[in-house]
Image 1 (tube, rainbow, N blue to C red):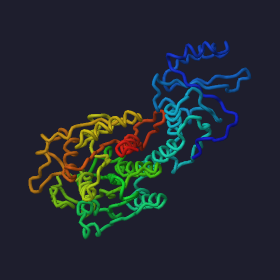
Image 2: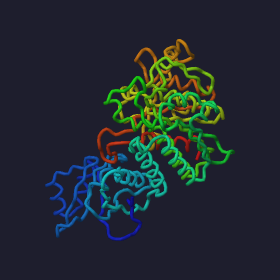
Image 3: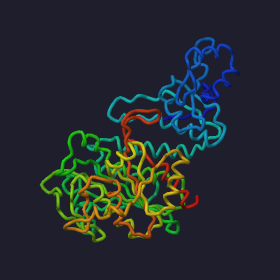
Length: 457
């Protein structure tokens, strides 16, 4: 999709004004413009827009209301809401605001139209003078990838398709690619991934990508890749199953972060692990109170077959920990409890490292991609103890579900390794400026910036 124009031809100017600064701006304009703005009632509210006509009735300029401190979504509605034409920004005169405003414009251009007649983008933005063009391009590419992967129905985004896309991404960036599939999972000691995915005709697998020099700091990303989740034998109701194509949102996010890090030539030795399965129903489905062995030797009692994500992550995190990387970060659409606690837009952050938590929260705030830390409260550790196994994947109590899920995952990470777990929605329930309804990247930019800060780049 073409969003930007590099040509320095004629454009319609888009001027940024704050609610406080509008009066001063209007005082500098011709009387005709002043009267028009008063007549249409434009007040500079962030995200609002005013089309200003010239003397001949054609579009002369556009005003866009922005926050006193620019927010990324202030410009998010422009690409799709403005009339056809070429545009350029006025008022973003430094690298930070120019880049942020441009990124907001670009993210608002997204539409998922794979299965219907495309609605072509008819507006184009001239690259602003001070914009970090490469940063915008790598961010837009990564976020569009995440959105596309999540939005694609499970019929066309099962474990096989997720493997194919990851393989293509690895090839594009000259990264090493490996996959362990089907019964190979048993012979190579990934029994938990196999147990959850064995009921599907599309075999379960562990997708493994590595990139970068071995002398650089080791960073491993783990993404939950449940390509569809019926709930298993403890089947979900229709309302709960409807959006389960998004249950591989964690996998989509780690691919997006990896894409950004590689494009930025980050000085890391990066590894990406994706346990990819469908949690289906068949004669060989995992059953309630079955006991599953894991890669690190711990056993899991299946308290609920719909708590499958943490089970496959157990094997992937065990493998991630085996290498003793400096940093492990996992993304997972793991619990409804996190959404109850923080809502749909704010990913929950759990970590065993206070310094890492501070770094990630600071990074998220700096790039306007917030995370919110919840506690790994050891007092709830008893709730994940199994009766016939070491652990249970479903605590008997419904309280603190996001915390007990995170404590469960912590059992598969070495205590000395800095680890962060992000529990996210990965979905917009409604359309807002820059954020169309459907799959969404949440915490991606925060984690990318956190890793760059962590390695000092």
